[in-house]
Length: 320
Image (cartoon, rainbow, N blue to C red):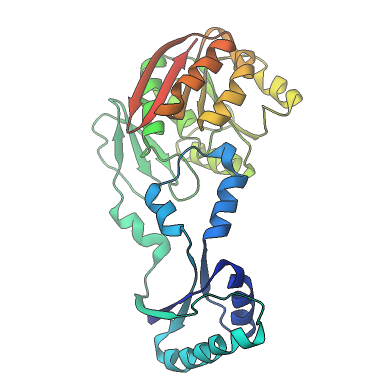
């Protein structure tokens, strides 16, 4: 089936009314680009990001538009109804600034968007020992590498980002066998699973997102690690002291935090509660320009940074 994409340019003030009118008129397949909502989202979640792609920011600047998807067979009738609706809006709502209300058309082929990207993905070798493998693939020869099998479409942590790669490479050098590992902000569970593959005795993944608990547990099971080796849980160890003390009981040889600088700075004061004597704190997701800020927080917490690595504008630090 062929589709027509009709993009209506509008203004931030008019976008909600436009969407309401489109829905009332029976246009139920559309997507919104709204620069103001984009900025509000960034402002409301600033603690959880350090970097927004510049090209995306430029693309969203002053952009307010609605993409409608029309079946090719009935596109002419739907476009006529759309033009009539847009022409009537300024008169119906004279106090609202709708902007240009112009229409741009493009053809969209009917594809399996959910699965087509999988055709281009390949197993990802990392460091000297690990191979990240998507769960839908079967790899006959891992060339001596340890497979880390993940559902790559669900949550953050695929190994492709520099911050995750640096953590995985660091774990290769840190794990000699029998370690207890905690991952604060575990996402997909990739660091815990890699640690177990490398010989860690057990791992615990902790995340504020309840979905991560379910996803990381499933990913661990795909790799053959059950509840006796891997535990996943939901909690905010920064704000919930009782939860922190519960999870920190028994202490860990290695504590990982692959998040962002702002959250790591908040997290560092409680990290010593999780560490055994001579335990190691591995943190990443730090933009180079914020590395010193994180180093200072680590030192204030009584830890000493003994190694670091930079890659593609990101930093990874090791402290004990």
